[in-house]
Image (cartoon, rainbow, N blue to C red; front, side):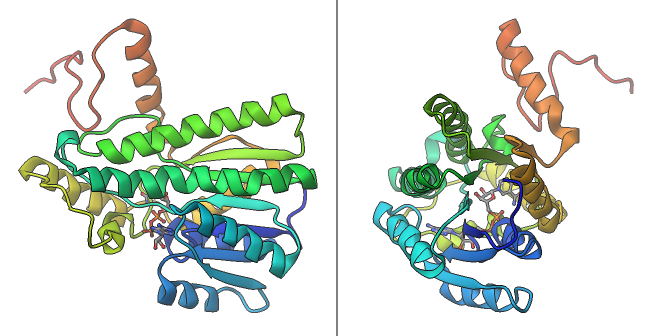
Length: 287
Ligand SMILES: NC(=O)c1ccc[n+]([C@@H]2O[C@H](COP(=O)([O-])OP(=O)(O)OC[C@H]3O[C@@H](n4cnc5c(N)ncnc54)[C@H](O)[C@@H]3O)[C@@H](O)[C@H]2O)c1
């Protein structure tokens, strides 16, 4: 899209972190906003703190429920008459060895992180195609391009979002829907509340028995998130991606070797390098 001023953006998970930062970045471009989330109080507070004059609608929406996402689309169209940018961003995390998660934990995380994006793509893409103009931004992660330990459920959800986004890009091109762009956002550590995602874990969803090593990893990940990138920097990258039709949006250029290293292992037929552990093929350091 060449111009965002006066256009309409829908952001899921818009009450916090990266979603709220995207909302601020879109507001700075003069866009009208629809922010969706499941945390009612936080959502109201977030929308009231947007720059004065921003036209904003808030919608309580659990993205894992297809009917609620259809209702979000309808609410956006009712309020503003159109939707131009759709950010399928809401997400949660869980941690532990891949075998230690209950079926309900898998369902919860895949329900939000994967089906949330599936539902957004299913509800909004036909509208954007019909308009002949629009852009879809799906939030994946560097965990969608690599497979860090103790994050199996999250990794699976994010790899699937990358696959879905790449396929959507191809399908739109083959369908001749040139006016509709797609981006997949793959952040590294960003200073948000993602490591506190258990605040949104439904009561019926059993938390995993993480074990000592996984708990230590979670603690390190939490402190890396707390000292991570400013979410507003991510918001600005997303605005640039929409304006320039950039597909892959990566926030940490210094992490590229995680991707190339993985591809090298696939091509060379060697074992995967485990992110966070020493590479067994590396020269031993002196001392
Ligand atoms: N922070 C990071 O380091 C990082 C890195 C890579 C990817 N991501 C991804 O960024 C996205 C945004 O997360 P964040 O880091 O801003 O975390 P956050 O916890 O600050 O924000 C996530 C938002 O999603 C909302 N949410 C949770 N479940 C929902 C549901 N069922 N329906 C609707 N909304 C729901 C939460 O209430 C919250 O407002 C997620 O998809 C996350 O996986 C984050």
